[in-house]
Image (cartoon, rainbow, N blue to C red):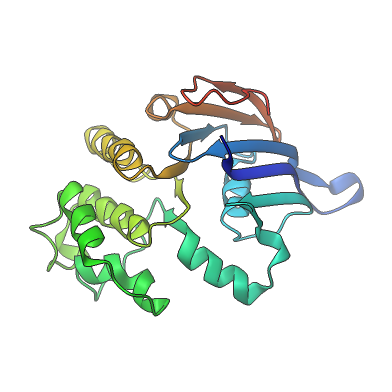
Length: 234
């Protein structure tokens, strides 16, 4: 099975000489279509740096990131911005919703910014599956934290991206709401065959994923549990 996301010998170093910090130190990884991956590690392990590289938000010191077979760092900044908008969905800890737009407007915003056609059938399916059909006219300020994060997930799914990158998506939620959001993420991964890479420091949250990858000192320490039959030590 061809990997939808492939990372080869990724390095990110800050500073130089005796003060050099190796946030990523030769990390390689493959993720397959429809796989839900959790990347865990302590603060400073390199997991956030890795997520930024996967989404093309930061450039590596060395190494390559392929999404759908395309080396994303071969693109210039303009092409990379367009690629991010069309092929990567982001779900952040702080939701990042536009306060003056209602739920539906927030969900379709990335498509409108890109000048694309809105697939109403797909958007309505996402809204219904995330239980937001009764909230489409609400502003973010009238939603709970869990509802806002569901809108953020819907927005990430709206463009039918190659991958969704979730950065501590339950970090601002209580434990009950966190579980609800994680169940929905898992459901969306299965329903839409959506590839999701989630970073978290919470071991219990990570157990929701198909595969758990532990990062220590900028490299993969171990990889556990996998229904896709990929190499656990790639």
